[in-house]
Every structure is written in structure tokens, then in C-alpha cells.
Image (cartoon, rainbow, N blue to C red; front, side, top):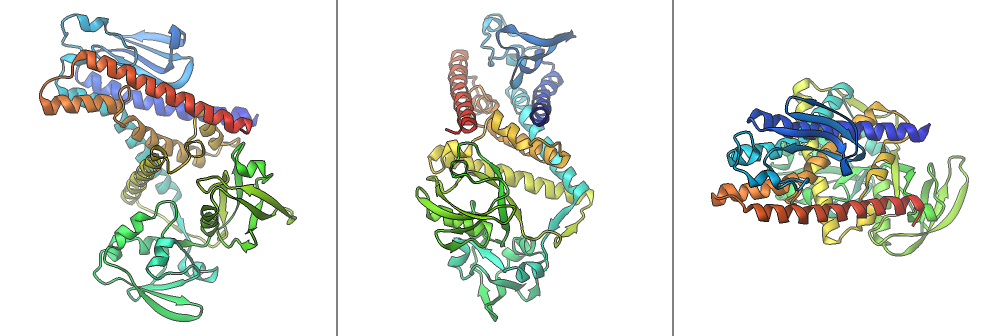
Length: 447
């Protein structure tokens, strides 16, 4: 039953994301009088269709291969590689007969819808659920702040209790510290209490740049406690016998005080074996050796806590929710792009960072939680928007790349070049699909 619920959530999310993405292309094409021959949820590979019907000029249906979907637009070289229609003179209802700016809008239609969907859902969650924060007084009572390496370079220390910013007492630390109205001031003073003594840290003028440099670790943060959430199959944590619900209390005789301090400890021991002391849900203690991966991870999702029942809630108006949702959405896209760059550059192990259909399905979990469902679906929608706009032939971004060339050079790309580009793009995507499935399966089997 648990597996069925997990799969239902995954396929429901996939159906929503793919249908709306393709609807973006479809509506843009129809708005410019372009004929759409097919609209399919999932691929009808080898001509196998689970369901179909025809309305007007368009065949609608559901394919059997749940790896995406497509719209077949008349007069366009796409993943179908159908070039027969290009041998005749362009017709008024064909994609190729329309101005480049119209074709560009058609190609970005799917990405635009995925972006809007992500912002809409996240804004809706913020409006309906509000946001919670940990009062600064509680942060100070429970150990002060975690200070990242970048924060320590300018004078902070883990355990500092931040009292005021430019003399103004702090209530919501993360929001107020990251507020542009504070960061852009000429004089930025942070009043702290360290080991019972009051002192002041003067922040540098380029403070915004200092914060943006920190990606893997927050610049400053409450000192969150954590326990082990989901374990990645075949990961170092799995091989070491670490279980969901365990708490890691010590690494190599060093106490683990909070989650981000733990992450730093792992990074410092990347590629090495460490002894860890664990406490399970029954308060039984045991020791295990863990082989930490080269990228400083051991393969689990943390269950963050330590401040339960002490948070305060903020409610937002509709306009405020949209503003907050937009900011969060573009922040997620930026974080995904940064992560993708690290994978491509080899700074992060692709096997430990990527997830395919199996991995994504596991994220939904065996319990139908609507907040989790919509949060994850919105996150995937934003990731889909980013991936599709990458300048790879066969993706929307590849078509956009060729169209931008046409607009700038004032001449279309040769149809043979488009065809070869589509072949290369499909080969790249097929290789990526195979690799991601291999990552998923190897995790599942514990490789």
C-alpha cells in the first residue's frame, strides 16, 4: 500500500507538470494560428498509445512511457525528427512560416508555465500556511548562532548571541540580518554577547557579496538539532547500519552540537573513515565506522529540529505572499543552477547529487501529505523550467538558442543544421536519462 501511495503521488505530480508545460506550448502556438498535430501526456514510443481522441486538427492522448510528454507542432523540426513536411512550401498554419519572435514565444511557453506554476503554488502555500520563524531570544537561549567559515572570517563565532543590528533589538534574526535595508547601509554594526561579554562586530561594505558566497552552508543560522531522516540506499550511512531516527552525537571523539557544525565536520573528513557515536529512538548508544564520501556526505536526509513548539507564525496578505513566493522561487532556481554548475565542473559527485524518477518518487514518501506534495511539485516545476531552458538542442532552450541566432543574424538556421542539432541533443538527453536511471537503480540495489 505504501508503494502504491508513493507511485500515485509521483504520477499525479508528473501528469500535472508535463500537461501544463505542454499546454504552454500548445496555447502559444494556437494563439498565433499554428496547427498542433498532437498533444500527448507521456511518450507514445513505437506508436503505442494508452488512450487517444481527436478534436479539430489535434490528436490528444496518453502514451505508455512516463518520461515526459510532447506537442507536435506543424512545420517544426522536433523530437519526432519528421522532416517530410519541410519538403513542401511553408503553409500559413505552420511554425516555420511565422516570424521569429512568435516562434520564440511558442518555445518559451512551456518554461513560462512551469515558472508561473512554481511561483503560484509556493505563494499559495505561504498565503494559506504562513511562515514560521524562531524568535531571536529562543535562538540565544538554545546555544546562540552557528557561524559559517565566511562568517568567522569577519569576526563571528559559533555560539555568539546576536542582540541587536545597528542598535535595534532583533526579533526575527534570519529575516532582519538578510534584509537589504540593513545590508545596504553604510554602517552595519552587529551587537553580540559572547561568553557573557558584550561586543560589536562591524560588517564590511560588501556584505551582500559575503553572504552570496556561502551556498552549501548558511552565513549564520540557529544551531538546529537533527536526527536521521531518510537513508539513501547504498550510501555510506546505509552501509554503516545507520537507521532513520538515529541521532549522531559524536564524530571521532568530537561532540556534534548542531546540523551545520556536523556538515563542516563531514567536509573536513571527506574521503576518510570516521567513528561515529549514535543514539537510537530508545536512547540506546552504539558506535559505527562510516566511510565519508569525497564530497563530504554520507547519504541521508536530515530531520531538522530542536525548536519544536517555540516558533512564531507570520501571516501574509495575498500580495505579500506573491512577493515572498516569487523571491523564494527565484532563490530555488538560483540554488539549482549553482548545484548544476558544481556537478558539471566535477566539484560535486553527480551520483550523490542527482535523482531520477525512482529517487524523486521516494521523496514523495508513503504518506499522502498535501503540503509536502505541493511543496515538492512546485520545486520540481521550477527545476523543470530551469532544465528545459538550458541551451541543449532537443530541449526548449536549444530551440530558443537557434531562434535568438536567427533574430540577431537576421537569417534562419539551416534546416540541416537544425536536424543534426536535434539528433545531437537527443543523444545527450538519452545518455543523461540512462545515467540518471543507473544512479537510481544503483542506489536502490545498494551499489
